[in-house]
Image (cartoon, rainbow, N blue to C red):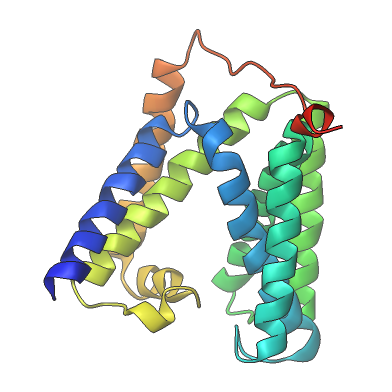
Length: 214
């Protein structure tokens, strides 16, 4: 591994640790970034599910991914509660698609629909039950755990740069129970640590930035 890639891996590892164990405190900064990432993945996977093409295999899938990513990022930045709904939707969608993957279902239309349906349920429950704090902590804890495990896999040569966005981390964890267990342990530890640290702290709901520009 070259010096540049080593530095990139260490930075990614540190970012993953910070997100997993302090993500709730950083959430307002992370919100549009997470919205962009969720949007890009959803846009590209929608093209994959609807047209049977590979993940980011065509220019159109890249374009759709970027368009959805920009829309999600802008909405997340301008409207806090829409941003929370988008992040919760993305979490539910990822869990739904991942659950289908446990039964060897590829990203077909059925898998995509299951992910979308669960995403809508999680987003609605998050807002209606006013459990944003716990959903945010869960998303950042396990999201950070994914970054940590992905950084380790990259450092060990288990995955490479071209495959980082195509589910290679998930496939590596599926191939080895060790990495899956490490992901779950880090996620649970991050969740527990954030609950403890933020027991008496709740993010103040910010004013919609849209109103500031009108």
